[in-house]
Length: 198
Image (cartoon, rainbow, N blue to C red):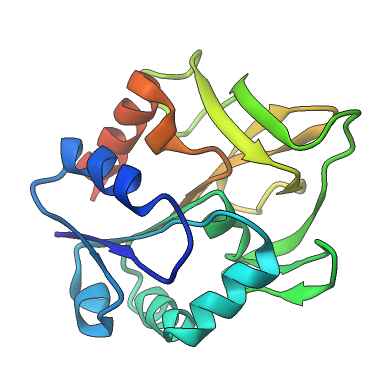
């Protein structure tokens, strides 16, 4: 079973539908026991970093994620759900993240923000996530991103004004700045790659 963490942020229903294509059972929940024991946990996120962190904390999401990290159990973060895995964000106010991945989230240097629409990516050579979709485009909606590659990880890069991390694969953690659930066939294949790796 794959659990999608419902903490009041993210495209929960579209994420549920997208993951149901690849997985036998998908549930949207904030039940700590279900989230802890699930084969994998998906952490979506839409909006501002600080608001997502506050919502996550309000439902005990940080503890749920920390327990899974301690047990090295698979987690997939999407958009702001990726960003909150990092140490901090400078979006509007400096806000502490979960610190699962090192680094800070900062505003993209680009003439027009948000970065909204389809963009190509440059996957890491050892990426499992992008197998078969290395040359495809994915759907982004964001103004902030992580920019420094994560050490000992498969770092996938995209560019909009400047390079930023489009995805990170590190041990049992997978995270994408784009929305795979809104990225058509390429996103579906990416999700399938992740489910098959579990």
